[in-house]
Image (tube, rainbow, N blue to C red; front, top):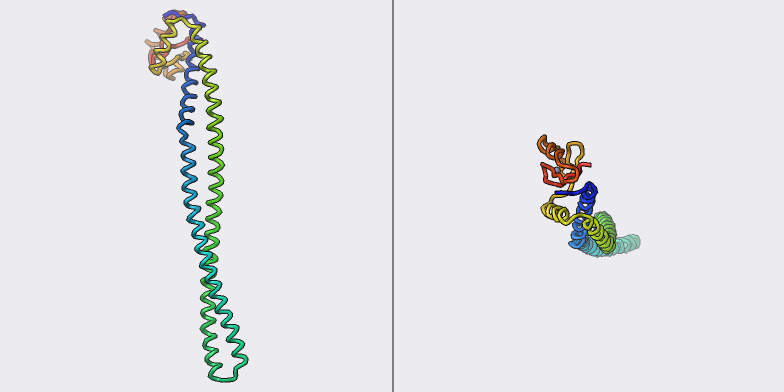
Length: 238
Ligand SMILES: [Zn+2]
């Protein structure tokens, strides 16, 4: 098929435009599917659930702490009262009774203080966990915002890029003869393109041409289209 070297260069350019159009379209489809945004929304939902669990845990623990503090105050009040009574009493039997009560109150106080310590440690753990969840949340929200704004601006940019490429494509296609452009369109629709011969390698498929293939290419006149014997792409030799 006749094609001037100029037309063959045009075919290379046309193929470059078509590949770019295809890549852009893939990006547009990806953005429209919004998989990344969906994934972030899922993360945000999971984070909300964890946040709720941690906050409920903190509320329950604070309630327990309040109860423990109240119990401790009651025991401390009772001890203070008993100690006052002890100082004022001279009755041996009363003194013994109060001393024994003070002993068990001291034991109870110790137990309550230990329990309070355990609760305070647990509170620290929950607060640290809450902080981690909140930091993760801020991160997810930030990413989501970026993705959503990229979705809008990215689509606008890609769509206007596609428009320019399509105009470029039509202009290049108009430079070719009907026969060559039809041949190219047919090849491209079959997934084949245009490559340049680089030494013995076709840069469309990256294969080294066999002896027969390279002979066939060399025997093709410069103003005719040659094809890669390996992949079938149009092969430009200059
Ligand atoms: Zn090839």
